[in-house]
Length: 104
Image 1 (tube, helix red, strand yellow):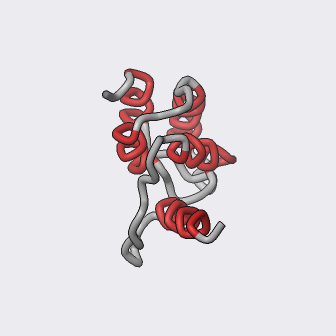
Image 2 (tube, helix red, strand yellow; image 1 turned 90 degrees about the horizontal axis):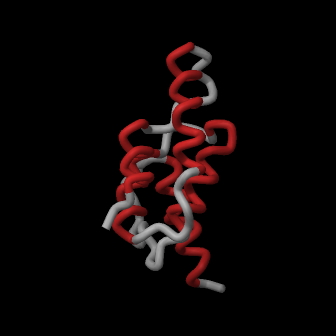
């Protein structure tokens, strides 16, 4: 099951780059930030997989970390195999964090 808040955030995404100083990026961020904070933890595995496509190219003023922690709140890890070389940096980060969890 995917909650309405998650669907809305995904529909508005992905997160814009903090390097983009256009009015469109500013407007996108102003819509995405409250939508992101409207999603309560934990997310389902299905929601986490859907949220993976919402990462942008950079930190997006910290919003990407918030999104990463939401994805990690799912019952099961979402990224459990090494992503391709051209994968989004945040998917690679999730992979590395998953790998690190196996050695703890």
